[in-house]
Image 1 (cartoon, helix red, strand yellow):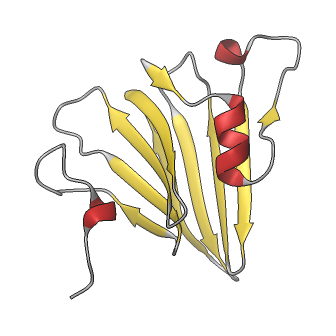
Image 2 (cartoon, rainbow, N blue to C red; image 1 turned 30 degrees about the horizontal axis):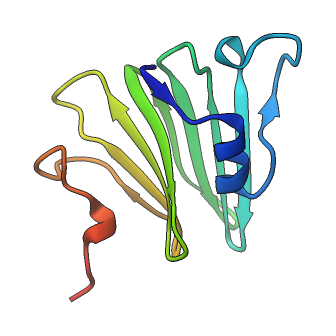
Length: 127
């Protein structure tokens, strides 16, 4: 990955320190797991900073909503404001749209034919 969020950013975003699978290895060579319970939803993310893959699960009570295995990731970043928390995953392939996972105010996943790469679903408004 060309850009990946650090441990402190992940801890602040998910509200708990992420699990580092091999504490004796550097962050870039490790397997990182972050998880958060948000009432009726659970969000789980696992990735290796030096690699280009991640697994993302969003589950509701009592069933799983989505489970994605992602590859060709170039950027994994986090945006946190008072109004929202957004995980942004960009891909090396130009044809692959950016994935946005918002944790607040509601758990919402945007991925697909969104138009230009610069479109930001957090700017969408309910009409």
